[in-house]
Image 1 (cartoon, helix red, strand yellow):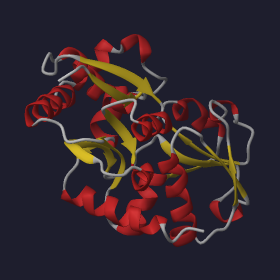
Image 2: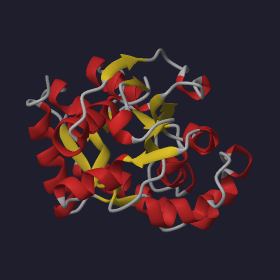
Image 3: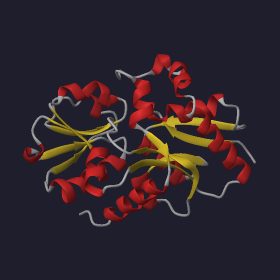
Image 4: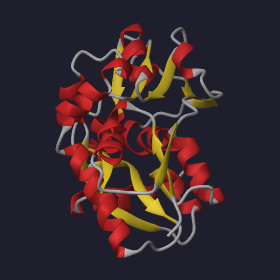
Length: 250
């Protein structure tokens, strides 16, 4: 098989995956591109990569894909880096600006607004890179490493994973590993083994990325307690429910 092209998310929560792929030696002959989630999805849609960590809200637009790993980016409680940030309480929110980087967070906040919070704000889409500099906005959905920096500027913080769990009783899945074509079983085993290596060596992963870590108080604790990597049956139930709610949005 020719060299695999892999697109992974460029956030702290994906560092264990990246560390495992790069340092385990368990997967050979591949190139790894680091992107924001929306770009990972675009590369999978246009076929420019073989494997991608794709935000789940993009899955309905990708035909004939395969789940290729028992790992994901998920949450079973507070996730800390997918947030609705606001200067006013939830019931007073009138306009929400939406981070460009991930469609999943955009769709999730709309599901929660309609079905859980019973609010009807106006939605405004931001351009790439704008969310990190929008500290003066009344309300903002932001994801990823930028949230560690901008969170203190907003007195009201609503964690979208926590809100989803309160609403549904199920974990939330933000992104999954998929391919557009069926991969050889040996490649899939090597790939998953490399991911597992990174997940099982988080302290070494943090040290490896020491110079690239965002400004979180305890990055290792974040990886160990806020991100849940196993794509288990409960998460699959939560993913199925979330995808079924998207058709009900207006």
